[in-house]
Length: 169
Image 1 (cartoon, rainbow, N blue to C red):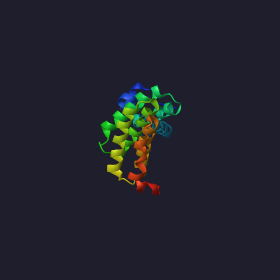
Image 2 (cartoon, rainbow, N blue to C red; image 1 turned 180 degrees about the vertical axis):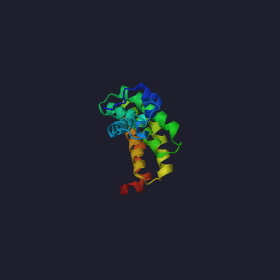
Image 3 (spheres, one colour; image 1 turned 90 degrees about the vertical axis):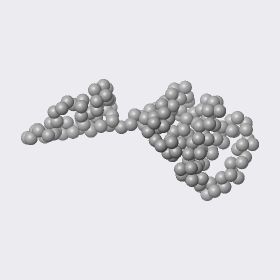
Image 4 (tube, rainbow, N blue to C red; image 1 turned 60 degrees about the horizontal axis):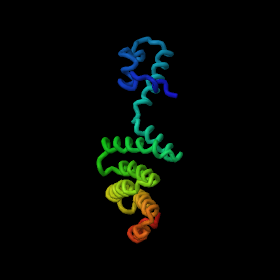
């Protein structure tokens, strides 16, 4: 339980502004107990400042694992949108977020969306990490699962031939 988690002031203004302008740590001769308490409060408040997309992604993953796909989808979309705002278009982490949403769309039977997103993720990984990287294998697996669920076995059959270098993994 985080001390500041319910504090609207801390969430809007940040931990230092929520405490006011007076800093007991800067007062000469301040009581050591007051300084230690103040430091502990600041450290707790700083935890709130971490990117919220991490906790949103964790919740989305939990819903996905529990099979609550309808609850997971908006959280994955929010996380992907945030990643697209903050990361470069070809960043491998962006592809990782796309990959998670690809899995969800496949589970929901939204194969067209899953395939489009999966291909984008695969292209980013191939370009940024190289065709022999393990993340490329994840992208291929995602696409393979989509094609498998669609019964499109012809598209799957070419994967091992195209990606022989990944056999080393």
